Length: 349
Image (cartoon, rainbow, N blue to C red; front, side, top):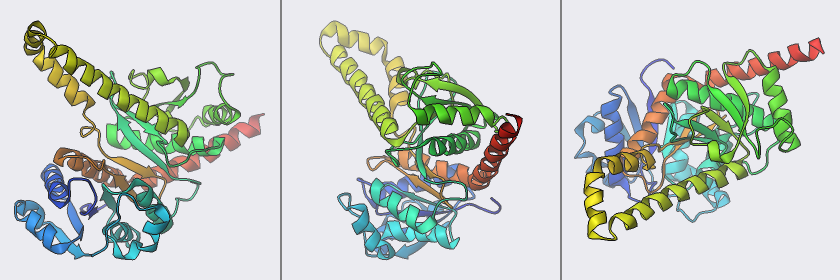
């Protein structure tokens, strides 16, 4: 993308309100000094919050709108009022070309529905997928998709997710050939559903792709750092994500109880405090905040509703990096390589 990235912000999304959203966007502005913003929402509340962030104020335009997408709104209800809500208007700014990306901490289902209707899917992509970075024991985080946008997927969808996930990993983690695997119930070639095995065959044949396809992985290896991109249907991906998040909370709560159970334990906590802070940082969802709907004609990033200012800043950072990397063009080029690779393979058989 040329020029300075312009990002539309749904200022009314999120559990913590406008103040936290503006604090996070201001933090991101300090990290990416060239960013410009369109801020959608209640003008009076946004202006009040911007008084504490003159650097952001100078780089932003406020677009007042009265409508808000509530957390309990069904996607169909949110769609009907898209043209009057901060979320809907932020997405419309991407459609019109005013902004290159939109960031919202609002209702996930509503955001997905609005983005898909307004932006449509890219050529060669049947369905958008929700992708996010998860922590690992390796040098890099792992990109995982789909995390809930599509509960049922065929082999074609899984191949498209792999292509989009690899492009995402190259953009955000500066990897030349990301290691890609399909989530499965085993690593043997005969394991899994027909859809998973067929997708693996297609990816093995598409040798011109900028990825290293390594076959299958199991759920217990998601955080191992052995792969850069893990691909699954949205049902399995969402279950795996929620299980990982629950396990992280379980571990931290268990350690908290253990370290407060006795005087000796409290002394042990003081000794191990630096390591505990490192663990807390590694598992903090704010550090990895910013899931993206890949496969649309425009970048839409979903922030956790409960994200703090640092979490919001990281979501904006994701949007900025994807714009700078021209993620839409990368995915389009890679999808063309998939088709070329499969056609070449069929001619040799």
